Length: 99
Image (tube, rainbow, N blue to C red; front, side):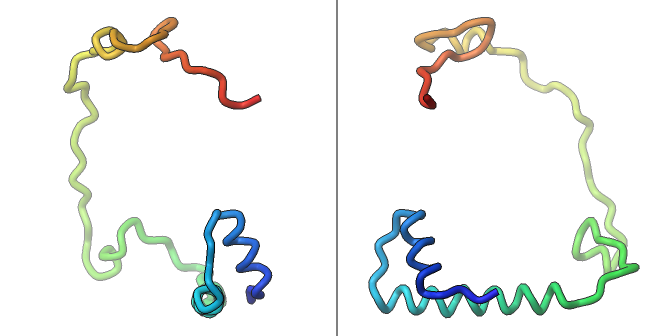
């Protein structure tokens, strides 16, 4: 997948970026190089290879140090919502922003 200068112009417009001519050309080259690398990675046959949970797991056994999932802080919802302009049933009320 190769991008064209018009693709870069459209992406810049959508991102609200103002690119000078040399920046646009440099970005086009960098993005196309990135997509080339992605295509190389996608071309590798990975059938039968089990995914790793951690990249170091391929070299040594990894034991994840997980803590118990327990409540450690008291419920302070009422105190946190006291300064809110509008609250209903424990939820912050905000003005509608989507029509």
